[in-house]
Image 1 (cartoon, helix red, strand yellow):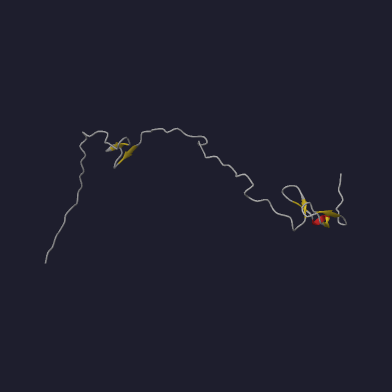
Image 2: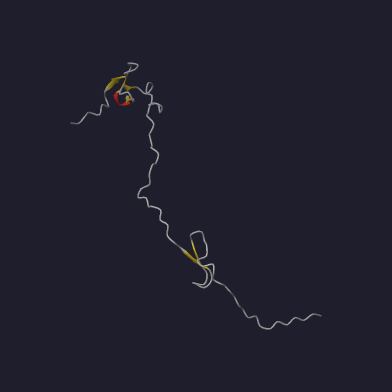
Length: 109
């Protein structure tokens, strides 16, 4: 069912009772058809606050796992440390290093 546009019609303001063109009347937030002088928008304080709950849990959580990790310093197998407290695996190993320099000549004048 269609409605007429009302471009030649008049209507009465629900607040002041004066006669206005029908298309100038606006419906306020209370549902009354009022003129532009009596129109007032809805106050923001009347609207309820949007409630957003605090997050409580993670989506698809992963459990903590303790996996051993070895850290090698130098040649692998020479001095390996475990990640549990970073203590050496075998303290009885004698680690030694050797190097050759060659000949050094020092001249003073």
